[in-house]
Image (cartoon, rainbow, N blue to C red; front, top):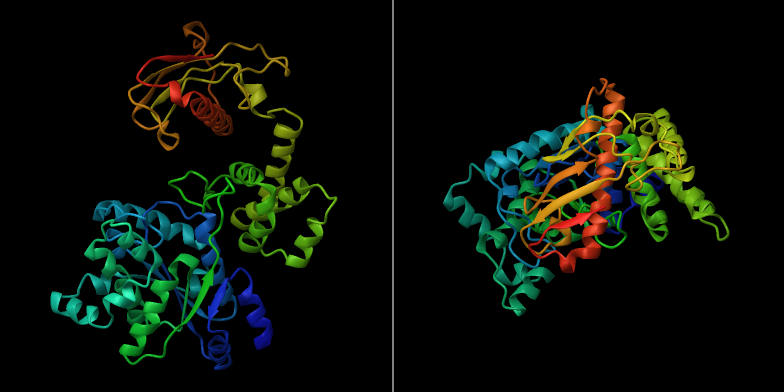
Length: 436
């Protein structure tokens, strides 16, 4: 592959390269490059948002380079202030370690293990003495740190900026020094931190790294960046059906962007799929198949496609339809849902498929005014949902597939409750509501 072809591959899904001339020079050298990506394990899932930069790291691996994945077990306890209007809560070492174990396994759904070097920045940052921290802090200035928009805005608005947040860019920048990176990848919100790494490498006598930035993937809601805290995410370990269904829920205007950042489909082909006059649903179904195939298999993608068509386009539930009269009591996030409710996962009752429809009643106790992101936390206790004790007797055993289907119905019922809560949010103030 020529240098131009390599650059074309690496340009895809990026917003800025600092600088492309330096990148071309490094590629022409012919030596394996050390390409760094730092991730703070503040959550336990690798989402498609994270996967954007992980997939770029994989592109470098395909060109024969080494992926150096920095797991920020130390910096996660500080909390990256990038794009934040207030100080992030600090995680305990136990919380970080739990997330590290989960994330470390998931990244290999994308990266080649044989070309991946995983490092933990606690190995060098955690060993620093106070004198070394002071020496590191002397490598930059307060004026340089205050160039960050988020710090400037908080300072102007008289919002607190903790000293440990000011140290965060130095910690992340020093990671580049510790692993001697040639290239660093990051999202647009990491530009400042990545450039601090370039500066520090110069101070320590190393050749400054090239910085490659990628856009932040918009979540399934089409508004905010993909985030687990907002619930608008797809995890790389979601089931094929769940992954496919979530992808189909994205707004039409985000389809092209998702194709570019989440798949390897040539953009010329994507533009043909989105030609005016064609149904965007067909393009979205192709997108969903491509994403499922990347993290599962082509066969799983086709099965998920058929499941979606049967379930939603034809208003059927292939497996669930057969199970509605034999679902057992299911516990989900501490909530007990009694079986044989007649729910088809698309509403509270199912009549069109000739299955006896029982009325589903949900009783709840609300202790405080609800907020959308908290409707299913500990403040809302779902006391019961079902059709009565007489329908819970002598239930036959279920296969694993049938149990998964039962959980899918419960999840969909919870989504319906979410929508109900949004409608009645203003009225739910410490009193019992009954939804039927």
